[in-house]
Image (cartoon, rainbow, N blue to C red; front, side, top):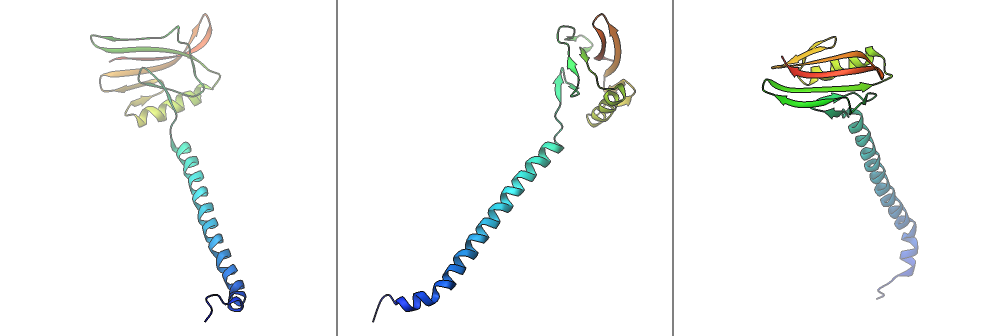
Length: 142
């Protein structure tokens, strides 16, 4: 009785190689699907995530450059007051569209530069300054 039969191993070699190849293909396919799934989920997550900058609890649209030396924020006896000035080359319609959509999602009502929520109002308008045209975003009590 032999423990190792060379002839039967040689006859089974193509079958063993095929099994090994199929196993490798299965593992490779599963790995490829997992990598593709992770890549797609990262892309979807970044597409669905709203990336805002915030200043004084006010979302700042990408494309607006805050002028920090001109703004201020403080709490008054009637509520908080936040004044933000920003420059931009983005058209006014896009800025107002952004704030109309974003503020509505945050529970603000209104439009056309005037929104309110609870006992606060938010006014966004273009103003002319010594530096040139800027956007003024003002949060204040009603």
